[in-house]
Image (tube, rainbow over all chains, first blue to last red; front, side):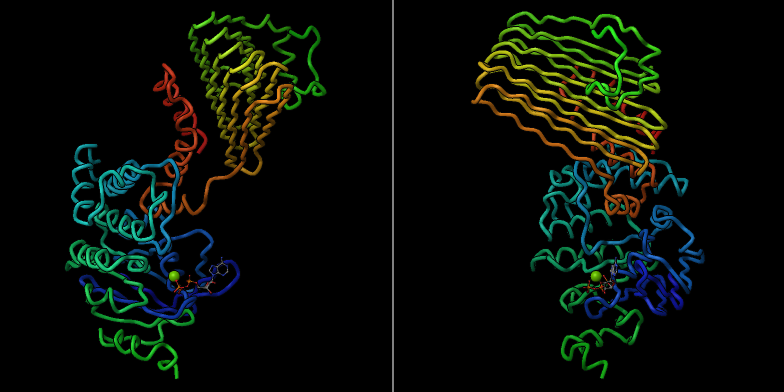
Length: 247
Length: 242
Ligand SMILES: Nc1ncnc2c1ncn2[C@@H]1O[C@H](COP(=O)(O)OP(=O)(O)OP(=O)(O)O)[C@@H](O)[C@H]1O
Ligand SMILES: [Mg+2]
């Protein structure tokens, strides 16, 4: 589904990704772990087309098409979803209004009929309820005044509404309390664990992986994948840290 | 009304398109509105053809006036309000100007608190693209015995291109000592991270900008009788700029 080959990328003038190769098949969940500043969020931004993140070498294909050729909104319509490490506050724009517009823009891009207000609200209510979020909150301006955990939960509600084929989730577990972690973990499984979908789960901790069991675990260090393995690799990292691994 | 054509040395015309003013010169006498004591006056001005509106409003004791302005059309558009508040009167202005190309748009207000206990509140939002210029000059004058005046100005401009210009000049002239005059003024650009977030969720760049600009002008027309029409016209104009 997603094939990243020898990806190099700069942020500003600084090389951050330095030959990253990774491939995800449909039905798989991959976890990416790695030290602070290694380039994990950069990978997520490059895959979703954030301006200022310049690919200098390498290729990314998504379901056979060149992902890097697409604008951010076209990547979304193609089925890519980025769960932000730091979800952005947008004053004055209500969650529901923005999500309905976003979903319908994606549907239009795929030649599907738009959802009516009522149809959309039904979907939104289902997802919000499943993730334990108040409908009132969904009517408030996007992320404004949300707590850290509420922002992450909101990302998952959005993912549920948009229902993407590929989710890149950047530290979705950070900032969540113990109960929220379970709810969000269940949400990821419910929305994304399907034979036709894939997840790239960026995390620092095993605790999320207790709920969302990865098929593969990779270490991203200094801009490339330095090690890959099964779920046991995460446990090993938790025990020994990255230093041990590098030695 | 000035008999002579104004020049850029006149403060109130400092940012104006004098050629456009000259073409309209001489201006007719300002429209004169008197709101009787205890009365209510509401007015909507949509400037969409490139014209100059000069309106004098005298608001009587305990009377209210609410003016909503959408300044969007023509090469040069100017809405000038000269407001006098008597005891306990209230004046509200909600103004939006949206300009592209080489448009010059101006909202100029002089609000005089002539007597005690009057309140005034002005909100002006400008969205400017290309080489457009948007100006707000807002003078508040508080007379010597106009104690307990409460006046507010909130002025914000959003520049969509580096080549656009926003001028904002709130000015206070206060002769009373027990008054509250608050003014806030900000000129900015759309938050690039917000735009990226919206696009990452599927909105096209134009729709993302439009949504954020819609939020920027939202609320200005709240309470206007023509709120829906004003909002729709503003959105249409925003859609042409993004
Ligand atoms: N605008 C920028 N200019 C220069 N360097 C940048 C810029 N943005 C990010 N970086 C650098 O890129 C590197 C990778 O950052 P990134 O956010 O991808 O790390 P990360 O692996 O997600 O870290 P964390 O685990 O802390 O979230 C860091 O060293 C960071 O300082
Ligand atoms: Mg990060």
